[in-house]
Image (cartoon, rainbow, N blue to C red; front, side):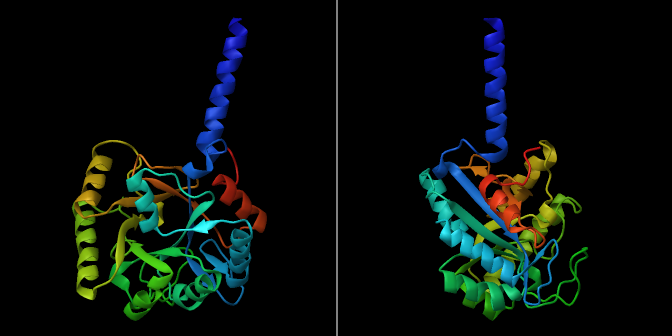
Length: 272
């Protein structure tokens, strides 16, 4: 009898863990999938943050054929406020930094497929070439300008990706506060339509619960940020209970189509 109870408890623990990692047993309306992209190439080049146009089109065709619904964060927010379940197979497509090819390549494709995406824009670098360091970026990569940001809003919703691409764990919390204030000043001055959600650069934030995380989240709230996104590679349970550590699934240009399908379904490639 005791052995049976023990085995039953072990089984329940395993099922709980599997659902926590993959949302395999979570009802369809309670799954929030958020995919993370960056740049789209037209010459077939692919790396961790750049996907070829051809491969991205294949992914869009798959989403369409499988009946996925793309939504903006503002639409997700509406469901969240009403505490309603999402339409089955809801997915949020997000693009970080605001590369010019999000205007020249992504925007026309979204119009063609009748889909939506969110662009997390580096708001202090509008219309400029990037000036931050990274293995997969260089200073010839250009960001969208103001007129492009205004034109894309029929299919792309703009959100925050800091003022100048600072890693929030590498600057002081006072500097984080100043960064957000500068971003909001750009939005007001340039009269941009920007949804108050933030993607942490490099996916970095204070993950460990404690004073720094509490202060960071308070600063986000004080500056009007409703939601903040990390990486994490998991599907979120919806409605959300925590607003400043929402997980996204990193879609890399080097992913195979099987990788994409697995990540879309489970939020990640591997259970462990």
